[in-house]
Structure formats: structure tokens, C-alpha cells
Length: 245
Ligand code: NDP
Image (cartoon, rainbow, N blue to C red; front, side, top):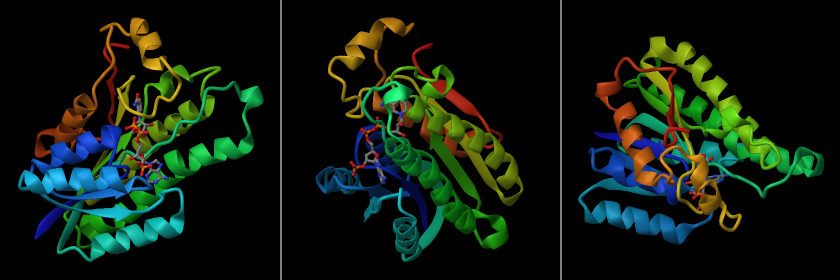
């Protein structure tokens, strides 16, 4: 019987690195993606080439009906869900709040917050030891932006990640007794395509004590630890991985 881990947005950027690293640990990797099928196929091919197991599931986690279908697909696999990595996230263009549409703010929250809540709900109902589950681990990819607030840039995104920090603290307490650990990682600036503003990463480098941008693998390594038995007493933690920032 497979031990299944779902990674939302597991096809690109940080999610891609998480999918590839967890696949090395003998989990069955469910890679969720929204649009970019080519990158999803590339990741699953690499996993299979290296002897790992997994599958692709297309779903837009900002839509409840898609989330229901996503978990129904997982239910068809001969195995048990033991992990959920809430990684999928969106970041809109830089703007101050005065010029931000409510539509954009809602769009950001639909994926970053409500999608995370809804996926976690479905996962808990499968992992809980009170519901024939094996227990498990939920890891939320928050952001250092939850501490800075990102004024004049993306206060909507930063606030959505603030919600995720609070969600992590509360949910960890709620589900500890049913065998589920809940933690968050707060990455600093990581080299991915989420940064669309030209030269953004070059510009922020000097603000980082380590004077460099992080790599997706540096987040994935922490996920591998958090999900493992080595982190068996860690729950409700918010772990900053941000080059000292
Ligand atoms: P990318 O833009 O590189 O990748 C985003 C991923 O999320 C893609 O796989 C995308 O799928 C998926 N996605 C977005 N919206 C949805 C949705 N509604 N449903 C399903 N999948 C969706 O971003 P990163 O890898 O940089 O970011 C990953 C996480 O890390 C995010 O939560 C982000 O907020 C967080 N983070 C990133 C930092 C950074 O500097 N990179 C810093 C701090 C936090 P598809 O390709 O199909 O569109």
C-alpha cells in the first residue's frame, strides 16, 4: 500500500523541488497543477526515471469543485494519504492598496488562503486516526512577507500569508490528537517564476544578510525533514528559511 503525499502546485518552482525530493523517500507523489501540463509531465517523468512513483492531477485549488474532484482522484489510488504540502500560491503585480482592485485581492485569497483551508479539510478527513487514517503531516508554504507586510508592493499577498501563519498555529492544536502535525515554512526570496517584476531578485539581494537569493531545493530539504519521523514532536512551527532575513 502506497503512502501518498499531495503537493499543490507541484509542477513548477518550489513545488517542483518538493515533489522531486519527496519522491526519493518512497512516497507516492500526487502532483497537482493548474495550467502548465508540460512542466507537470516533465516532473513526473523525472520521478519515474529515478524509480519513484506518482501521478498528476489537474485542479484549480481556488475552486471548491476542483478540490473535491482532486481528492476523489486520490481516493482511487491504492494507498493512504499521509501528507499535504499546501504550496500553490499566486502573487500579483506590485501596487499600493489605494490602486488595488477588490477583485485582485479576492483572487489572491481564493488560492493562497481558501484553497489551503479547503485542501487541508479534505486531507484531515483522510489522515485522521479517528477516520481510519494513518495520521500525517500538513506543511503550509507561507512567506516572509507575512512579517514585513510588503507595503506598496503586495499587501494582499502578505496578508494572505499572515492568514496562513495563524491557520497553521490553530490547526496544529486542533488536529494534534488525531495524529496530524501542521507546520509552515516561511521562505524569503527564492529563485522562481513567481517574481515577474524585472530585476526584482537582483534588487533585493543586498537586503538579505546572506547576500543571495535562495534556491527551491533549500525549501524542499526542510519539507523532507518536517514530514519525516525526525520531526515527530514538531507541530505549529513557523520556520523561516530566508538567508537570515
Ligand atoms: P511559481 O509561480 O513558480 O509556481 C506557482 C505554482 O502554483 C505553480 O505550480 C502553479 O501551477 C501553482 N498554482 C498557482 N495557483 C494555483 C491554483 N489556483 N491551483 C493549483 N495550482 C496553482 O511560485 P513559487 O514556486 O515561487 O511559489 C510556491 C509557493 O511558495 C507559493 O505559495 C508562494 O507564495 C511561496 N513563496 C515563494 C517565494 C519565492 O520567492 N519564490 C517566497 C515566499 C513564499 P501552474 O504552473 O499550473 O500554473
